[in-house]
Image (cartoon, rainbow, N blue to C red; front, side, top):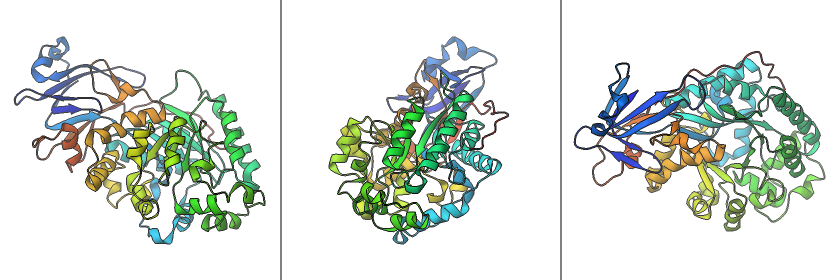
Length: 455
């Protein structure tokens, strides 16, 4: 395959053409495996003309003369099993708990329903140029399940399916029993094999307000380093109120579920931040923290020292009004401190009303931040590709368009006004309002067969 375009941009480099001809990328596709596409040449069209593969009669040629080519994108934090709910308005003044209650009302519970919702979310992701995800496989009926993993493995996406679970207070032993059983099933089905499959298996203790400190440690010991761990952290003002004061809407919600025990009055109610709250149970065990809207100065060092990644979901933070409580997200300071910050969308629920047609787009997360405060385009491209790969344990070369790399995808972004005015190609792509086009990707993965995915 040969793709002719205006230019190529990834997190490390830009390639521009000479004169009017632009650049060309030559790609060969392997019949099996992931990633399947190997870059055999990239450069000016004139230079690529001389490559021996450029003259093959079977060569497929795609012309995108007014577009920039970027790597396939990584959505480091999403909930594909909520896609069926669609976009929903939310009043941040109403707080986080009413939104949680809405999600609980609409969450699906059967294997077939979950598969359909995840499949729809995968289609919307691919439409938006996303080729890899950190997907949260929601607990089915409150119990850990492999249904979400099976559903994601049947799509064309790569990444990690994080099996979510709850284990707090009166429900801690029951929750951990479900985790133990599900990890045993995962082991029996070979999900921990080496080399890792296209979709890896991981676990997600849901959050510090739904999984106790001892349960974080116990679950990590069950997983025994064979897969990654993720959790929501420092997401809302309600979480801060519970951690600092053992009070507020989340406590009332837990009491309503019959989960609150006297022991939780000792777990919560200490004058520490949510990040400090999980210092002993999660830092060093959990590799990826979603959101971290509430980050204090000391928290940045704690996260960096733990080698943690953060999945920042800009439009979700705005949807929930996080800035009203905590100020602007500190992703730049996190990066400067050595924290790997990737981009996520969260679920479709918190996206704009056009998401069902425009897709679940990391490019739109980049565009949102660039419009908001002029965030550097190259930094955004890195957050949406390489940093996401690092956060999910994917090979970094799969998200670089350079000779010899075996890549996860190539995305074409039409440039409306050209890259003039001293703008980089990355900035031109992000400033463009045109939808992306996924040109190279493995759309025919082997589907999982014969699984009983019940918990």
